[in-house]
Image (cartoon, rainbow over all chains, first blue to last red):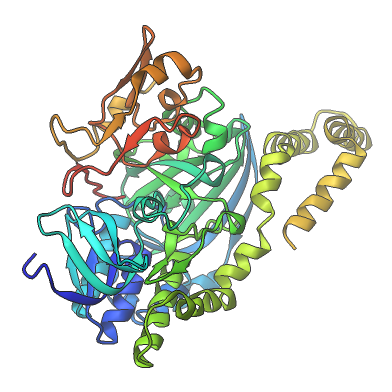
Length: 436
Length: 94
């Protein structure tokens, strides 16, 4: 540190999407911002699938498309229900997604985060890497007044601290600002990035130019656990991975590597990645507890943003956009207070909560607040239905001399046998209620 | 069967030799009280082992996800920290 006793307007802990959104918004408005990142470079510790949702970034950097390292814009979304040898799926493909401006892009996080951090620095923030925040500094009243980093004379002071330190949120939980995360509120995702020529990807997925396709997968691949698989096309690589709830993972015997290998061997997936070269294997936790797992989001001198607060919409596989949006809203809350000459007290920072409540972030999380619990209790949604539907499709589409009415009866009987008529009606009701 | 070591071999690390960032608070708890050893199954980098009645931990291949810390909720026996700044996994792609 050049001047260890220097005081900043705001310290942002972490240089992922949430931290970068916050630091950029504050620096752009002329505030004195220090951003601390534990990695060698921004992105070196960060992992995501990864899909970038343009809207959230556009609200921060409107012309990001001119310089951001984007892989492909998504024109096709596939949803697959998997059984051991088959998948039953839907594809949505639209040429509308080829019209500028693009809506969703695949990205490679190490490259994207570096770019985002460059924008933060150009906006005027001081970004220091290889700095791990070990604790928060508080005054006698308990108000957060700065951070301590793992360096000599590591005490740095600020009027407010934004915690964007990621899903493990060690800084916040050790400071007693939030409870530690629980196995039932977090999923472990593992993924590989597999390289192959762009032309091969274009041909396998029916793509041209910068078009991209993404696949989300459910069913037998998660071996009865609540979990999902994914496959995203990058320019000249494919990201493939799977994530399952830790509360389920800890009660079974399949390792994450075996789960990933099994997904890659699935007959619907294997031909798509055949011949590619794996260049990295990564793992990351995802805070999937939803609305009911959210901790207190602000207090005297501090705010939580992004994964460190648990802002993730597991149903829609959205996280980075919630991270960027909450980072921006936290920053805008502070800008409003600074402009009015008001301190970052807990009562003033309640405006951050108000902004969140008005945004899609809280509205979406509230809408799906019952989903995590429902999937945890009602195992038929992951364990029974994907198989039943695949068997029904196999029966229906196989031409074998039996009459169609007999096939229909068999299919209906297979559902009633596994779930009973009341069970089926109850499941329909549960889905309806959990998504209201 | 693909071994986890073959996967980790693709990754870039700067190992902080002899300074593991994860420690077991009380190995006897693992050896004698815990009967699941879920860490040995769930760790995506295969850092944990349980052989001959003894828990083992080698953090060199750690992906810094936090799984072992979170799943050990019954005993809270994992003293988990990030590696010293600049050390540990260096994701090329993330």
